[in-house]
Length: 310
Image (tube, rainbow, N blue to C red; front, side, top):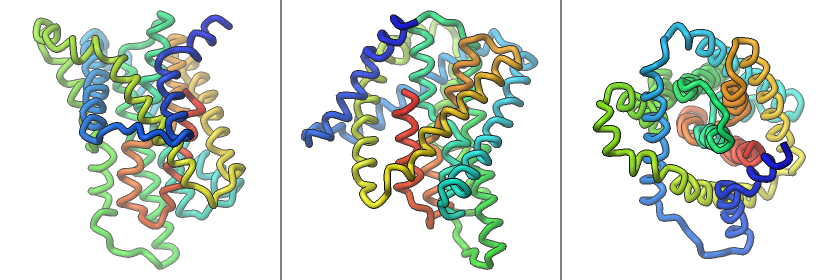
């Protein structure tokens, strides 16, 4: 066990993330071009989707149903658990609390990738359809959080007309934003494409995956550190929930996975998803639908949680 932990802490992915943190701390002029960032993000998400789509060919829908139901319930449960923590225990405003809760009820594709890579490295089996579960857990909490926010505004009599805050726009952002669309597209390609065709794209969407992932984590280390440095007026203790909620979510996730009959690896992945916080799909939707919320709080805490889980 100690050897596995030691190996994971010194894995290239963790070290690249650490280098990103150090680069910001020492004020290095290291930068990742936006065009390159967009490109390798697409490759990573497509690769995850294609891998999941290929494996879905061998899985029946009936086999997935218990996990799908559990995933939706866990997503909604984490939304309300986070709201209670953030609003009642840490005394954030209702608006900021719903914004933060949307992120923790949703999931992080990057944290999922890190968990999946860890299991692959130590050769632990996990259910092939977990990539589809990632997609399923991304949207429900975001939509529900924004609905609760709109109900709160109606109750306060302060709701303003904002075309970007309509339910239709929110659904589009939550389920068909960039990250989800690429994952769904990858799953579709992996599910229907001929095996000979998939072999032709394997060098890019397969062999280079972990190298590209390391560059991505380098960038995320830089972004996380920059976001934390910018939150000068917020006390560190106010972000304690960013460490507590993932532990609670992870514990609930792994217990649920064992309860519904997932393998040890599958339960681990479900725990990673339940304990993670979205900082791709959720910020995009929340920024449009809840403009009054403090982006430093919800994005900063999501990134802190990502560092904590990795």
